[in-house]
Amino acid sequence: MIDVSKHISELLLTNNCVIVPGFGGFVANYQPARIHTASYIFNGPSKSIAFNINLSANDGLLINKIVSSEYINLFEAEKSIAQFVQEIKTEIKEGRTYKLPKIGRLLMDKEGHIQFIPDPSNNFLLQNYGLSAFEAKPVVHKREPILKSLEGTGITNEEIPVIKSGRQFRIIAISTAAILLIAFLIQIFIQVNAQDKNYADILGIDALLHNDVVSTSQYSPGYMRMENYFLKYYRPTTALTDSIPMLTADQIHEAIEVNLNANNNQLIVESKYWVIAGAFGKKEIADLVKDQIYKEGFSVEVIQKNDYFMVAISIPLEINYATYRNQFIDATGITDAWVLKK
Image (cartoon, rainbow, N blue to C red; front, side, top):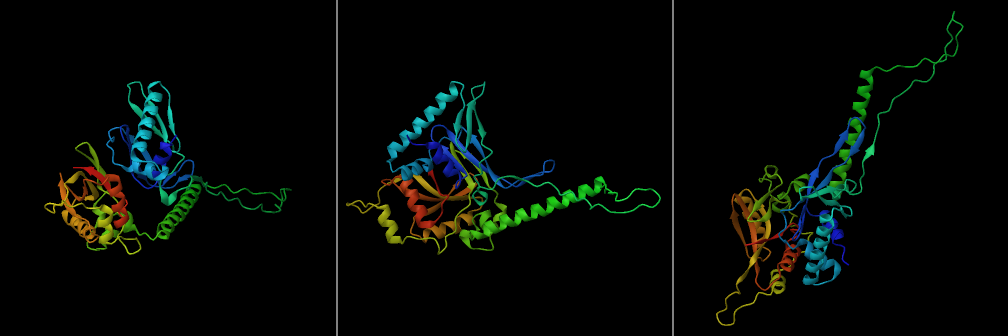
């Protein structure tokens, strides 16, 4: 039997949202480093996992992962997910807790609502994967015994203890915590740079555009609901650099297999799905991304939904949307591209 929860756990390492069709979505949110001043426990940056029952539309991410990892077809992957969902619903309806290894536990409360308790022992942030919490108590120094002969008292070799005031203790504790925090931040900086990334790349689309005029700090990560589909209006995007293998225009057209009508030489009608490369609050940003994708041989356009401009690539009718999304990622390197129904 296919272990669907294992594939969900693996996807959460590289994605901020993993949807289980017909059940709900697991959403990962960034959590900064934390210091517990009372217990002197340091927790590094991490991803906290939450569950949203409203995110049930199939985006193809989980199905495609199972198909490629288990070497099965799309129908078998959909069937395994349906069995997985039914197993969870049966367990929690009978009052039992369903455990998802490395992710958390699912249960049903008295009102019949599904509750999710995340597993705090697992960190899904790749930059700090495997970095556990640690304790660092402040060091309290004692003076060496002072050997002194006190005249007139008859007392010799007395150890004179040093009593530190409360203010001195607080200064030592704060100084120690500050030094450890600086060392911890330096470690994170080294890890990020070891992967050939900079902080502009962490913020998002700057690595794709290579344009210093564009300020990415004004676009904060977030989510929005639109026509029952879950849309990120800002997603980190992998840079289109020479180090990423690119397909030529001929290779792309050959892979997509665009069929022409023999009578009037017209393109076959497009399907009802788009591959979305990103969504932005400003049209000029979306246009710059569109131009980069157009150079790779794709038919791309900018569509507006509410106040957001999405860079959309229409999927041909005869191509499976999950397969086409993979071809697009291989050609452009935009690993966060997702599928949206028209």
